[in-house]
Image: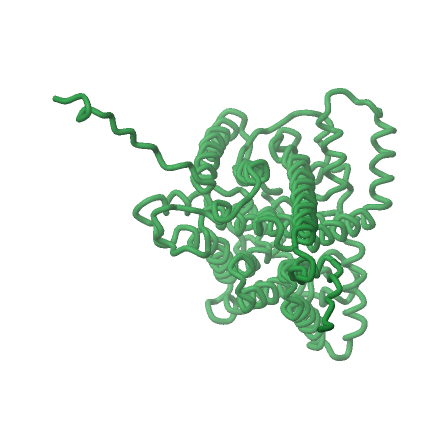
Length: 496
């Protein structure tokens, strides 16, 4: 055989995508989580749901209205509240929800009581609707891929996702915002104004703080969509108090007072239930450091000082992040803008419980699937793979998503964490305590990275505009980009 005919053929493997990287990282984290659950439950006698979520025996329902010892607290609290005085008759944490925000729980309870004989019927309907809402990102990410990696995607964004388990465990109405957050995110990525508008509007009706997502169309200079969704959500929320015409002003006032007071609902020195707030993250980061540099009194002084300005800190962080997003405009990958908007939802309040991480399932679904491509596209590209992004920020996003979703059950007996209501010391999750500072590090990395990318883009634009002006022959007009940057047109001599 001639030597020329024996040439070797080298087959290169296709480059790894961010979608594939996320699936690998999430699968490893989920595998470790299953092992920790087995060890914690079998050998230490720890209840996994308490470690991952909140107290099991919440005691807000009758013996036939819950499932075993669990009442799915937030749903049962609503039933308990509406069986007595109207929640907004006084300022309280329960009154921090607007009337329209309680509709999913109230309609489920009414349907169960009047159409199915009461008992667990209302709870069953509510949990079923919650589950259907929560799996929306998983179904969308897996669509068209059920014969390949679709089942894996579905598992990772459902039973492999701790925030989803926690939301169901709490029975919180946050579940019903998830499909609409996903819709708003898809609309933002595709540039579809209608999807973005509808998604933001309905999510904000259920949870008013979701109005922050209006920063997404605002960053794209779609002012009508941004202000239209915001104003519509605010108007309908206020209008929902009209169902109590005789007490409209009183109930509305109590609702506003309750919103303002919610920032002090839980002391930031308390480790359980898990709070993701910015000031709590600072305290948690200090607690996890080796040694006690400030001492007991110094730590308490730090907590008191942070609590005194917690609302200002929250407003400042959200405001500064919004300015960065607006300045970034189209200069950074849209996925980073979306991630920053979701972080704003976490930090808008001093008290944001860990189940709010469920809002990131929309971001994870987009990492797995690019909305611009068909669901069955064999390339398995995600939104992070489309366009030019930062390797550092994309890596941070993939790793953090895998870590915050993993239902790790690692109980700790560190005395400092024996603070909270209704929990034993061995049932506080060490991993869940790490999540708060971990999220803070991710936020600061993302914010700093977006700022650097934005300033680099601005310098490049300025340099290109200056070079265009310098290279143009005398008498020719500067290009539109240069004019937009403030360039002066040369004078033309129009005389014959």
